[in-house]
Length: 458
Image (cartoon, rainbow, N blue to C red):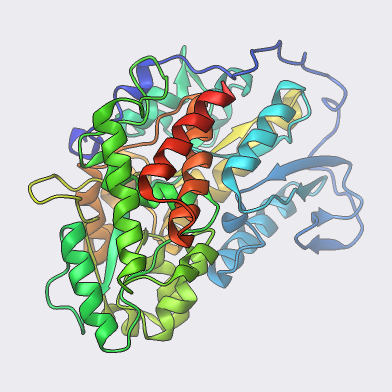
């Protein structure tokens, strides 16, 4: 399956990943709950809410911190229904276990920073969803769940190579990578015959659409990881890098600095020439755009491929298929190779005792990772599965033209650098992007601010 390995991920997996504030010893495992039987009939009412899942009198409490958009608080009813069915089945099979979901905000960077503190202090939930770009920083604290995966029949050795090399350490499975995705340009194919391939072509097409009273192009412009993550492809396609081989910020390098300036200049031009409204600053994440995209006046938007599932649920599959096309992320200059960020989410187990460790891993596999769970979840999320078997056997990947196209995007996709400094770079770029959109900073000033602020944070 080497054809599915992303072009730039191999450099990531050779680096060591440590928290910026140093490591600490893992809490010793406790035998306190080892005598409790998860299969004991607990009694009480069965509850399935965003606050608790299971029987009220269950003796074992399992804490679970999911990604909000992949939880019972998702705005997509299909995802909620899928999880409810799986959670009910799992808790009724483990009647002495109650699951307590822990909510977080949609700001991924802040959530991961808070999680880092709780993990180091030994207060992390039993099961936590961790964005793949920061996952390597948590692995030394995560529990080995190889035994549970084997018992559940989940073949983690079948992960794509770039995933396998990151989640397995010294033969131990330390994380369950359960989705991956790519970014793309979505365009109204009933209005646009040929999708733009460069930044200038996008601006030109957007102006044509704006002249007809339409919104030419929208993107995530608010504070959130999605804003920069969706745009990194237009930075990387210029041959630029955010960090050097030692994991240090590389934006002072003239080539990289110019590439980021070019990216911000493209955003400024889109706003100044009426292609993009300044209200894009109100989109903190991809899903915030989808209602406007479905409303019928937007010509183009840049998003991760979860847009397929979202818009199909909002508009209906037939209408979405008839109206929306999908094309590679535009490059900054003609002749460059289109790339984009390939992301995804992982589940890590931080439970302190063996019973909770086993239960947390079992739950994660049955919600997202097993063949059955991954089939329903990835299809709903318009995401790509993470193992060779799943990639080759899921029928929708062979028959749905949007998913077939996504496969090709993986071949030139890149991943965010999994080093501590990236979160700071990302946050500063999010702030700078907003300043460019609002007009309070020029692109050159915005880049200088990013560099200065990242350096001051060290």
